[in-house]
Image (cartoon, rainbow, N blue to C red; front, side):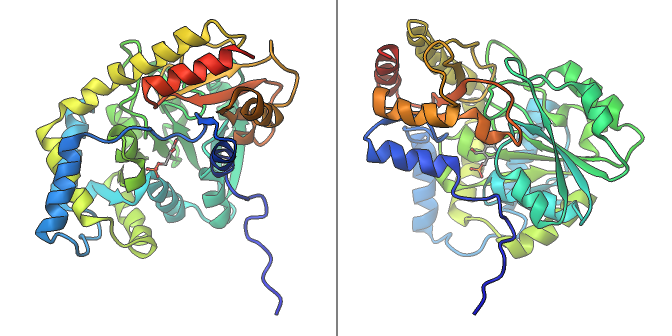
Length: 382
Ligand SMILES: Cc1ncc(COP(=O)(O)O)c(C=O)c1O
């Protein structure tokens, strides 16, 4: 038999899987893939146990447990002042990944263009292609990786269906400002362009800054899918629980896809998160200080190394420039680094369709202090 031609010729195993496997093979410290090496809050874990033992083990409602949808709506109102109809505008998904895929699949048609900013998180492009759309990649320039809104304006055509934003931004650790949001607002006013805002690191912003969520801007929110993930906020990336907030007509379309993609998401985990969100809203407020301490500890030690860097403004990723150490391309440098420093990192070029000249790699600092100290000590030796 002849198997069909691949629908995703440019997709292989993700760089995260590759680097994590290499880190394990070399027994290197894994600062590549973005996950904590510590657990979620004990009280949250106890609630999962409680609900599993209590028998809350059957299908959840398709759109999410009502208690969790209500807790999400309350959080969005508390953090960003946006009032939501939890039943019609909040959908719980199997991670942010599913929400992103469902949102793109719900609205992108063959021939549509979707503007994506590189470096871009790797799940956007395949979702656009599978739906027959065309990703229009706009390269953000190092070192600041700011969006040039004039370039965006030039890239908009009658075929532009959607713009995908990610703030705080993986992999660069940059954030969008209020001025960015205003520029975006002016750009899309009077058009039918939709927005997909990937805000999974919404609670990890540093130095006293406020996260500029789409939820703060009614004129943007009315045309947006806003996606977040409990994995990032509660140190539970393996649970894969995320959500999407969107106006009722957009949510209705997203749910048509979600209904047949996964139908619903883990019941006991949703119930536990609903309880925890309600009883401990302080968790997300404490997150900036929690991660800023890790960023600062790692960076203080790395200041003694030959890497150069500007502290991340958000996320749990720190980008570092290795041009004082090596001329190797970043994809080769990370392999060299595993062997010579025993530390795994992620090269930035893999997030770009046409990478600019840069010598940048990304370290994940969502790790125990001892892990960060050991990694920095090894990195200072090269
Ligand atoms: C920018 C970005 N979006 C989406 C995701 C996926 O989130 P989830 O694990 O909830 O699917 C990640 C995870 O690393 C991410 O960094």
